[in-house]
Length: 113
Image 1 (tube, rainbow, N blue to C red):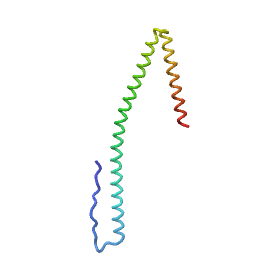
Image 2: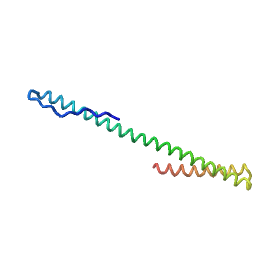
Image 3: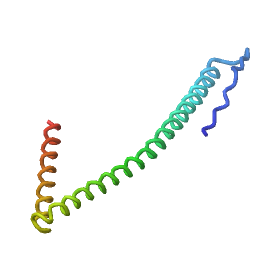
Image 4: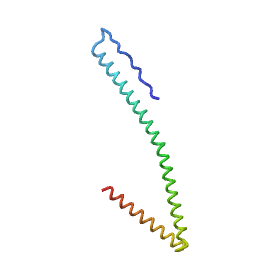
């Protein structure tokens, strides 16, 4: 936890000159700026921690989705194998998957323009 600077009430003395007052004002401004920097560091640190935690869950979700897609493709090969043989089924699934990937890539490229 960031430490807060020791802000004191102004000490007014009759014999203080303008130079001393300016010096104290500059010191107080530096202390305030330092406190603001520490505050923003703390806020950013909390958000960064939250983003890291969320990223872990997103990565886990993507891994599970990829596993489900692989299982679906293997299931399609097994389903088609009795009809066209294992090699034909594999070829059909690979070609269909690559066609879908190409369409998605062209749609994505179109979105960039």
